[in-house]
Amino acid sequence: MEWEELSRSGMRWVCLSLGSVLLAWSLLTVLRAGNTVFWKAAIVAGEFGHFLGIFALVFFCFIVAHGFVVEGERRHLVLSGISALMTLGAGGLFFSPAVFATMIAQRLPAKLEQALGQKPSTRRVFDQQRMFLPFKGVETREVTTHVFAHAGTQDALRLDLYGGPREARRELHPELGKGGGKPCVILIHGGGWDSGDRTQLAKFNHWLVSEGYAVVAISYRLAPQHQWPAQREDAREAVRWVKTHAEDYGIDANRLVLMGRSAGAQIASAVGYAADDPAIRGVIGLYGVYDMEFVWSISRTDDVLNSVNLMNQYLGGGPTTKNQAAYDSASAQGLVRGPDKTPPTLLMHGTIDTLCWVKHSQRLADRLTKAEVPNVMVELPWAVHAFDFNLDGPGGQLTTYAVREFLAAVCR
Image 1 (cartoon, helix red, strand yellow):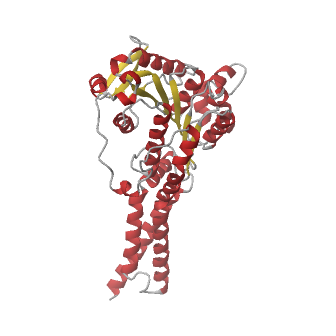
Image 2: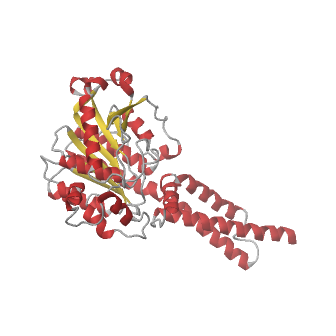
Image 3: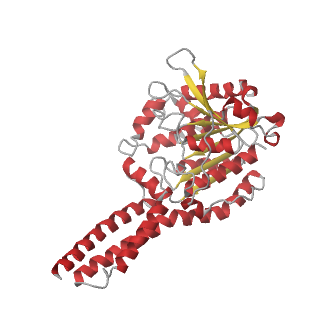
């Protein structure tokens, strides 16, 4: 009997420890992650947390079913009660992204229609079942790599064309483009301007191809070896390459959309807004920054990314007379000129993103609205940087829906 009670006592401490871990992890769906380790854990909590939620609820049932909260000494009952409450709370928090996503999904179609003037498709915005039973995996398409800038030098830049020339021609759909060409999404990767590469989140690119779009993911020269506006020139060169080779790869050169994540969102928006190019039909920015003076004003050496160092590397220091022009040309918010000059824009951002404050997207959305530029801002209350990592998660499903409907509207 003593051995049995000792075993039950030990199990109660195990339950308390595991309950503590689950609750702490689940809190990352509502609290800001303080470093990159917690940020990665927050991605799991937000976009895969429904699996952890099931585990937490099963563990709660285990605690109750084994009588840990009704049998034993009083102090052990207190421990078991705390464990049960923690696991139950963790389960609820792990499922909160799905609850928020459901609420956003109810309003998103009307929001897109109001902003873009086109009735969205009848496709389901968010499917709770899909989180646990993902739809058929996205088919991997042929990817061909091409040098598009600085050929023959150590700075030679490459792009990946998803679908490849043979698939591009074989899969042409007359309804997708005048003359049979596909609209093209040009992807610009993130990485704080000093890292990252064009292969980021390649599954999303394959998904875009499955939706009937040509996809070009580009490289650009990185800081600190290359400061802005080198990245702008590289992106412009990529646009020129796409236009020059559009016929070869079944692309409609008059229907291009620039899309970027994080640092790439800054590049995509600054290039797209300054281009005055009717071929650029839209800009998509995920968790980006759009006013570089504002970025500098809130940068600190002790934040998650040491943003002061990033800005020094990218723009050569704070906004002074010497580099004010770089700040101005890198800031999409200051380049907004009105509905005839500025492409329609889709912005998506996580409320508790510590790598890039949601205020950046909110400020740009406000500026676009004041200038009467069609725009949609989707804010995800639970989400952090890279919330689109899991296409079947809450953030991934909302992202694919919003991107699909935005592209359909601006590329029509």
